[in-house]
Image (cartoon, rainbow, N blue to C red; front, side, top):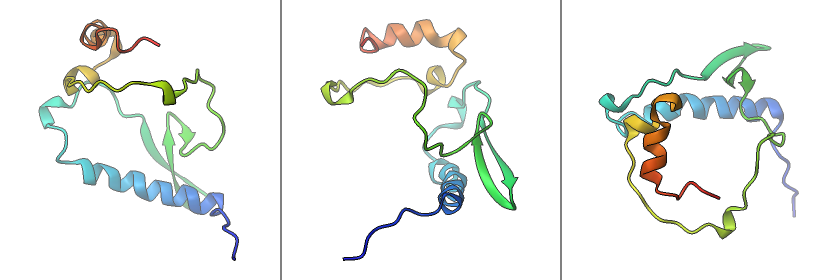
Length: 110
């Protein structure tokens, strides 16, 4: 049986860039224009060696390394569906955190 070999990093980055470029087109009708929020975009494209590379906050996407952030085991989570305002979710946290925390009703706790 032939062995699977992962794509080269260059192909993986190029494929990711294509997906990231097409994603806004696919989602264009999902969020009402009025719910755009005030957060500035953090995604950009840069050419590296003649290949377009997606950058998130100046870091190439995808980054395959372990991210330096707290980890939570999601296998123990219970799901409780809730509806939240896109306008609140996409607004700067300094303005919206109190509303988000109040609407979450404790669900955001570990």
